[in-house]
Image (tube, rainbow over all chains, first blue to last red; front, side):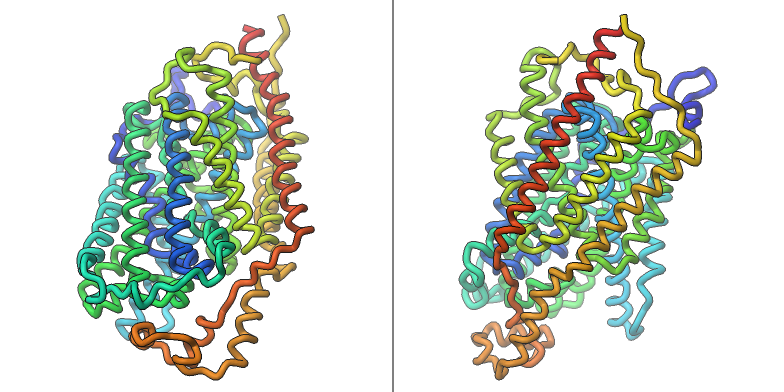
Length: 464
Length: 130
């Protein structure tokens, strides 16, 4: 079966190409997330007001800094496709790994669907400006996913080089927008004194805002998926991930500062394309065009990174027989997990066409949150089972276990925020993961080769 | 020395069935919340609130700068009222909160316990059955 097909004639397994550098890792992480600065983050404003959004931006920024610190240490040590999934397999156990694999696939596939919808909606808005009303968005959604899947099928280097270029341009557009609002002089363009209000819902609104606060950074942890394709995982993953986190903290703060200084919070809290609206308010057609293109670039970069990450996670599940082994194949010429890439195309498109964007986004956010919760006890176990000095680590994060404890505390607060806004969805999504876990234990685990689940050249873990 | 576990080979039909099953579960979990219509509550409350308000920029509590920005965005007081009066309902149902905590905590406890058992099998085969 696929196992046979992933070996060459002289029986050497085909591996993925090691061609990426820290800039590609930055582009993968920031590329997935940056669309969240162009849209989505502003729902935090609707949930609790402008100040609540800023608090959520920094509190969730702290959550993701902990994620990046933990991820950098573990991934630079467990350098394999699948990222957190492979970490779970080596540190916690098969059922956890299966769940983490599913979190990754669901979070990225659903985010990809949302990104493709954004591209479609942008095309419709652009067509309206040019006098063509009621443009059908569906062909653009299909075209976006299909083109990016083709790119992913053909090779990771071209895929992430494209991401590097368009992500940089999208980020640069935010800087240009920031400079064009005369940020040092209040009352000239920006009107924070008149537009900022107290917390409209009090502190409960601040907590509620944490859920969509994840949009500022959701997906940065995807850098780990490229661990098997970077030239030096121990150097590239920490550099790319921490550099990406710094970029996003800057972008998130700029975004908040510009948008809240131009729009009443009640409008901003529900706007579909707030940064494009900001450019429109400034009355410059060049800025409007720049933000239109940048928003499209950000959405495409995000969808591109999501296809890359989701396919690696699905491929890893197949390679280890947690899911059908058919998906564990690597293309003999392009060295990509091509079957997983192709399989996820209709899935992403079908998610986009369900008409349940709220549900799809909540599923994506909650899957990410479950993954971050896993990282907390994964990190604690990792240091306990292989203390410092017992194995080679590419990077050692400081202040352990403070980042893990902080991360767990912030995850609990974000679960509560999700409960406040989407309680029924939270239970429904948990039901999915519980049923999938029971199914794995009762049916899938019998297909898993036990000893093959531990491939790192490490000594026996302490306590086992 | 114990012999390593040899898993059965899965046929194509079984692989297709397993893949479809996971997809069915995903779609079902996307659809189920629609039955509860929980998220519709906030919108309904907002709609009823806006229906009873006499709308002018003053009654909506908008200062001069806010009014200017609303107008630039293409909104008049009637149109803006729906957004301004929209309110989320953050009332906490203690029973639902307890159920949610139990579900999330129970899920992780179950997963860690079963994973630990499976992990011991992996380590045993890897290090004891060489």
